[in-house]
Image 1 (cartoon, rainbow, N blue to C red):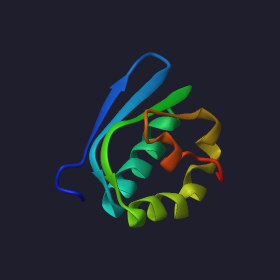
Image 2: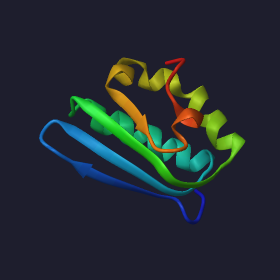
Image 3: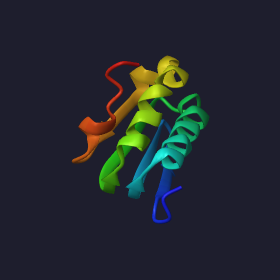
Length: 93
């Protein structure tokens, strides 16, 4: 994992808010996918804030996009927000 990547989680009664900070690489992508899979089944919506991401490495983006199939059943619940949302959006899920 990028040494500076952190994923912060905040749960409410009907949603989960994930905030990513630092650089996004392949390991970070797997951490995000795992967190989405874990929490999406418990929540009506999953908000993923990309505002505080630094570098988004093409390999990390590729790992994330190549594993979208694992998130397909939750894709209608996932909302990306922040300035980097277009880099990670689930358009092909």
